[in-house]
Amino acid sequence: MAGSRTHTAPVGLIGLGLMGEVYARRLLAAGFAVVGFDTDAAKNDRLGQIGVGAGSPAAIARDCDPIVRGHGLHGIGAFGRRPGGGGVVGSWRKF
Image: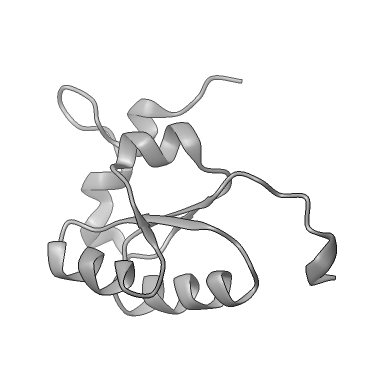
C-alpha cells in the first residue's frame, strides 16, 4: 500500500538512458525518492527536471538503498571499480 511505506533512503539509479528514465519515472510515481547518475550531463539535467536528484556513484553507494543499474555493460565504468576509487563497487558499504 502506497501510504504505508517506511522506506526512507532514496533509491539510487546508475544510468539514466532509456531504461533508467523508465525506472526513475516509475519509482517517482510510486512515491520513492530517487538519486541518479549518468556520464551524460544532459541525461542528468533532463531527469533532474522531473525530480530525480543528482549524485556521484560514490554518494549513491553511500546514501542509497537499493541501487538499480539502468544501463548495459557499455556503461560499467560508473558501476565498477575505477583506478583511484569513485565507482559504486569501490565505495560500497561493508556489511
